[in-house]
Image 1: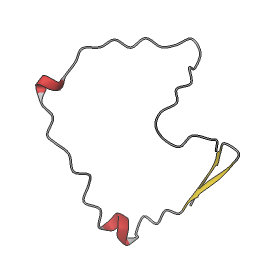
Image 2 (image 1 turned 30 degrees about the horizontal axis):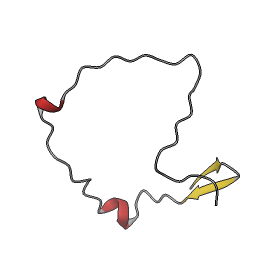
Image 3 (image 1 turned 30 degrees about the vertical axis):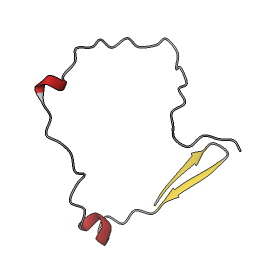
Image 4 (image 1 turned 45 degrees about the horizontal axis):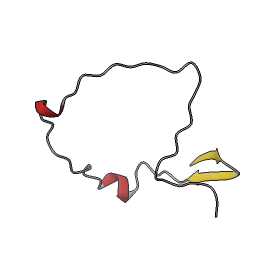
Length: 61
């Protein structure tokens, strides 16, 4: 079991490493990577964290 504090509440996940869901998991389907998809980039760290809201769970009505 994993318990985490999340925003104003808690998140609890039950994890059974021998359970049928994990035992029968065959992986996530994906495409083979292709060299033409590779892009050059540069990592520039921020001095302080910058919050970013993505299209996932967002607090509010």
